[in-house]
Length: 126
Image 1 (cartoon, rainbow, N blue to C red):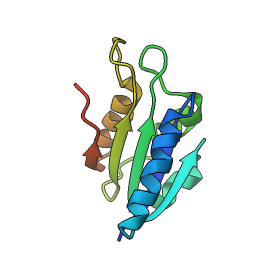
Image 2 (tube, helix red, strand yellow):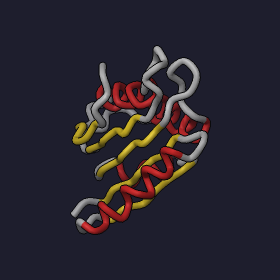
Image 3 (cartoon, rainbow, N blue to C red):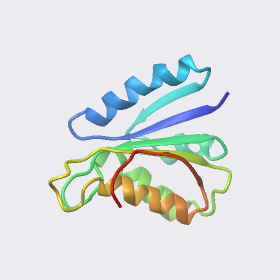
Image 4 (cartoon, rainbow, N blue to C red):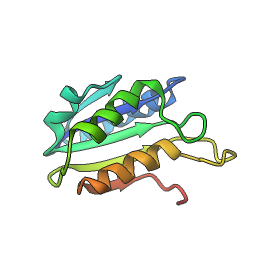
């Protein structure tokens, strides 16, 4: 089965709760799963040829929570093409905001630019 890293961006803990609910479900299917809140690039890199699941809320005008901003910037600035990476995005947000789920959409777009293969994306309007 797969080695899956769940990388969390949260302010009030909702994205972390989603990750903690997903972890045992994935483990029950035989996957090796780790959850990372305040993740670093060093924690991301072992999953570059595995599976990364990004679970993030959105703040402000489509911005990332502090707990995932550094990881996003490091992936953007320090990593390039990642064709072996399979990933999914769980974007959380309030649909009454103009930039609904903007952080998740932004991370998704970056990984697409890097050539990663999206396997899962929560259903959010584009």
